[in-house]
Image (cartoon, rainbow, N blue to C red):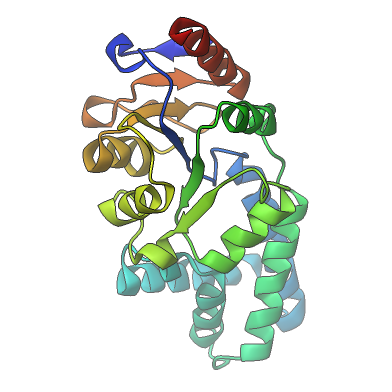
Length: 251
């Protein structure tokens, strides 16, 4: 069941609903772990290095890229991580190999990514109610578009905003504001559904006064303090039930 922590925020249907993608619409960790392992094995076999050496070079590369780029879409780029990793290994940029390893990562990632139950059914409910929807997500547009198409969600969402388009990752206000500019909701009751207590929950609350619903599952921690959501749920069918209840209340 859905657990509502602030009843005062759930007195009407939403005028629009924003969704995070990664670890909200599908579990991120299994897909990432499989993809990272595939790249690791390929690099180890290509250069005859140890797993320890790979981990050290990759982790250093990732830390350097994130430190340099901050809270931007490109700070998540596997291509940049892998390019820098090869440089740290003393091999130069090796652009062909960097591209090959990146494709291995995302091909394996998508093959192991599975939507949570009842995501499409919830989106159908929202469409039938005439409630506009948008994805608000970090990372670059190309890979997030690929995920949406892979999951077959491209016909379900009205809009998508990536941090590449916005210029900033969540919880910066830009991605949220751009989504609302695109959607033009008729009222001010905006729901934000996400897993991250800082980026999605606090970001949604502080930037657009969103009604926040946190998706809880293994590895996700309930937000506390300023990161506390207005409601928590484990299965999207619970959000469907809440929508149905609010629909009946308004009739």
